[in-house]
View 1 (cartoon, helix red, strand yellow):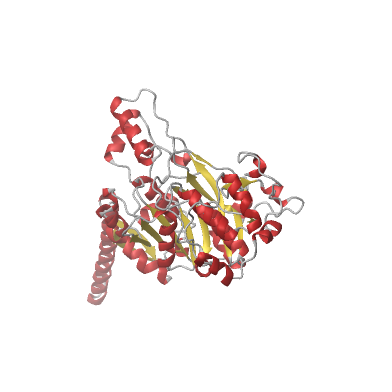
View 2 (view 1 turned 30 degrees about the vertical axis):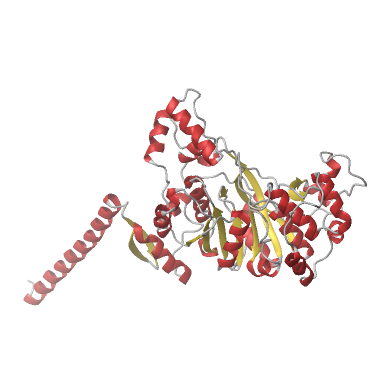
Length: 492
């Protein structure tokens, strides 16, 4: 027979067990209730063996506070891009109107894995007119883009070598600079989302959006509200029209990270794009780097990528960029296929440079017109003034060439030609200038602005001659004995 003390102990134990059960059940019920009924309001994080519930509208602030401080919130290599998008609060961005048109055209999962968006031939008059208007406005099929998730997946067609390569954890942080003007909202934000989803979060110091004056309403209050919800994004608004070159200078002067990456607003980065770029700076801090540039169709948004190492950059005698076969350039001294390769020039769609080196060699020419030639000029300056240019085959970025580019030039009827004239007068030795001017079909009498400061910069940096550049960097660049026609290959 139990004593009173034993009965009391038994009752207390039973009551304690019931209370424990009720607490655990309540925690489970609340957790299930929130997960099931309020998943659009709260997000759950697992941090230091504790579950934390965060309002979705505060997730950006939460991540800003936690991750840079070195807390143990991990979602880099262990979760899918879809889950990462959820954690970062990145919506797909597809509007109700776009969904209505997709339903009418029987289109699902538009553009996923880089697949083309194909419209049926029998479009209604309404949709056909809208498609044509949007194409004319933005220079590509913006209606198709409106149907594609901002978080769309892209194929990872890197070589096995690139996929298996390991990089140090303590790589330098980067400021990623995106200038934009009258761009389409979906195309710009897909660039931003792809960076956030496919970059190690701790390596991104910031994403700088340089607003180069626009009349688009969605770049006003909507943009301000949007970036408040997304971590690590900073908006800088220019008060006057800059153009690509000056907007990038503005970004470089305001950037915080030790490494700068400039990327066009109509790009999407692919898996593993960032680490090989940053790792190269550990070995070559005075380098200008660019990766493999794959193509996105302006008509269907289809993405073409492959596992090839790609080509390197070169130029013609009119000082325009062109691609060059790397095997022909390297000849009997090839470098490992997917290792960094010397490149004569870069393509300006996406390139990287250390901030200190960029400032040391004079940023970009501030007297250039709005766009054109800046990529070739920067490559010349890097090579001749103590640096180098490398192609990084394991870094792949997808870029769209729109059907139209900037239509406004402020300093000449042809801004690109004005810029190339400046390149020739500053960086080409006197004996080589004639090849440029004969190639473009005009004389030195044209206006190319004041070049005194850039010549002084060249002298102060102790830059080498263009003859040295041809002999040491591009010895296979043919120098014509005479110029016949600009279209002749040997004179380009």
